[in-house]
Image (cartoon, one colour):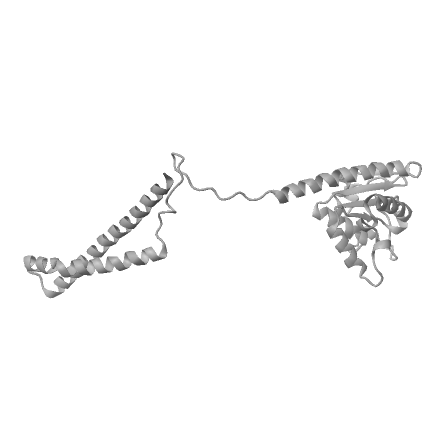
Length: 264
């Protein structure tokens, strides 16, 4: 069920706000319509309670009467110019959240010009609203209720649809012929890499011990012992790399054959 917040100024529109609260409570349930007088428990911080309720509302009704804009405090300063003014805090918070803010004009009031409002309320005149009159109060509220039910139902449906969309599973890479790439499947596992390295070391040692190529080259070139050692190192590295490449190729070839056998 949607939560509706009624924002009003007591000295401006308390009577209309109270009647509106009663009508909306009949439609949406008293626990889903917030109005400070009825909903804030004794001893609770008034400002904190307002901020919490605005934070969870699905729509805010800004009840605006003829003295809403010009109301002043004890010092004669306009209330809306005070950053801690409750009405300003409520509406500004709802505008920032992007929830529907509906101006409800009572007693012949008109929406104020944006230039007459604080910076954080200047979007308010752009919001579509409606008028409530004493003579047609019930029919006016019916229009408001129908609009709220329609808009809030659409919002709930859209939110539910967004929550129901699950991220798609990652797609496998395909080549130009549309076949699934086997590059990941052909990668060697950790134990296979260890086997490759060990077999390469053993194979290289056997080859070097059996084929004394560095000594033959050293005799042919009549090189000194230092050069002979260098030839030995170069030959050993080459043998190691050749055998390593051969082992990797053999392991990958075996895996490829296994994959091809499974796909048939």
